[in-house]
Length: 115
View (cartoon, helix red, strand yellow):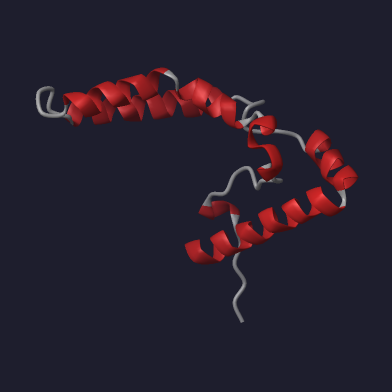
C-alpha cells in the first residue's frame, strides 16, 4: 500500500508542477484559496506537545555517557519542534518546487480499490 500511495502522491505533485508551469493562474488560485488545516487548528499545538513528549521519552532511554552526542542533538531539535513545523508552511521557501500537497498523508486517509 505504501508504494501505491507514494506513486499517487508523485502524480499529484507532478500534475501540480505542470499546472504551475502551464496554468499559473489556476495554481495561484488554489494556493490562495485552499485552506490550511494543520497550522490553523488545535492540532498544531497537540502534535508539537506529543512529539516533544515522545522525544523526551527517547531521551530517557539514552545512556548519558555514551549517548551524550545524541542527547544533545535531540534536545536541540525538541526545543524548536514548533518552529520547524511552522517553517514548512512558508511556501516561498520551496521556490520553483512548491506543489499542491495532500496535507494529511496518513494511510488511514486513503482508500484502495482492487479489481
